[in-house]
Amino acid sequence: MEIPEAVRTAKLKKWATIFEDRNQSGITISAYCQANGITKSTYFYWLHECREAALKTQSTSFVELVASQCTKEIAQG
Image 1: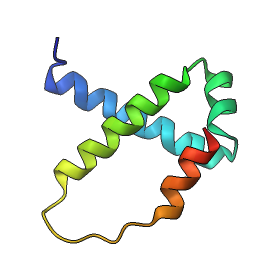
Image 2 (image 1 turned 180 degrees about the vertical axis):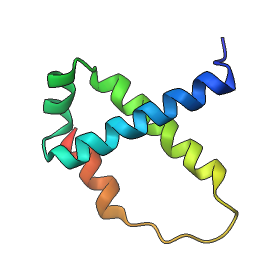
Image 3 (image 1 turned 135 degrees about the horizontal axis):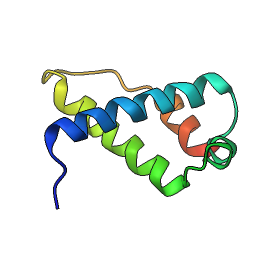
């Protein structure tokens, strides 16, 4: 079953706030998830969904990718 677009947009915004909060907290993803009652699989599912949504909203052009940020997110998990 597919999520209605308005609900999906609201969830993406909610999770973007969660990711920002986690980044500012300075703690690991595992510790953040445990402290906030979030499973790591749910965290990474929505991280993937947010990244995919961000890619869809950007224009088609070349973008510099910074591997260190992606590696940091994965390593902290």
